[in-house]
Length: 222
Image (cartoon, rainbow, N blue to C red; front, top):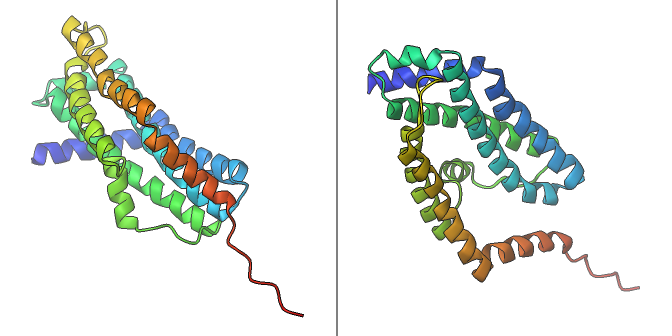
């Protein structure tokens, strides 16, 4: 366990030195925050609060794009080769990378929430501990949680199979087939949503509700 903790701490230090990770984890999400809040929402606090969900989702996804790019950069620079000569497996490297990425993503999320309150005057940010859990699991609909859990387990297994310590190492054919199989949960969820339309209807209803302004007070009797 101590080796995993040390590896995670080292991954955090290496990530902070990587310009690509810094871009995807800090610059990109904050840029998207101001684009959505200042341009799409036009600074309206109610609309900004609606767009916070997609913005935070983009933040989480962007940080993991940076994670993938960082691992590829480490492999090309020979950094992974140094880890390979130590008692570190591909599973250890991927697990510590995910944990380090999570630890580096949460601060950016809370910076965005602070900017939403201070700059765009969003009145209610909700329950912040619940938001941290939301960022962790990705969503609060039951079928989506199940799909994400299946996808997370499958892709972690496939990532361990596809992991290469050396730039010239060949990817096994079976690993490529497993990689293609990771699209199956999304395909099934897309087919279900296409026939059901529940998620789309909920999103449309929430967006249209922004046009419904609070009823004005009754006119004074003259």
